[in-house]
Length: 118
Image 1 (tube, rainbow, N blue to C red):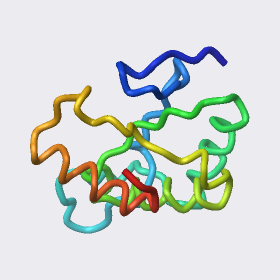
Image 2: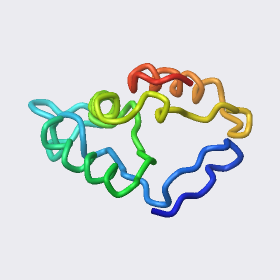
Image 3: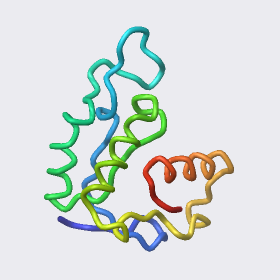
Image 4: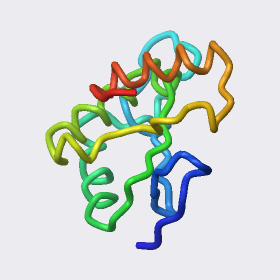
């Protein structure tokens, strides 16, 4: 796997990113924004996460709106069970990303859901 710098954060991420909008919890009944009937549940998602790790992918695109937040929860549980704690981290210098307050709030919430630290 090839890795590149993520801006000026000091993080090295895989050139390939696994988009996680398809994982979390399939929508049932009245579909809420961010939920989809075609999303895979936690058990169905694990083989894709496992293959990504086996191939060296360390860059996962998830958001607190994917599957109503279930995408982050499923990914967080998988990573917690399958990688070393010190391997889970986000950018330490957020100033290089020039985030807004709302972005920082979302970042902190995502870290909490992913069971990580900002």
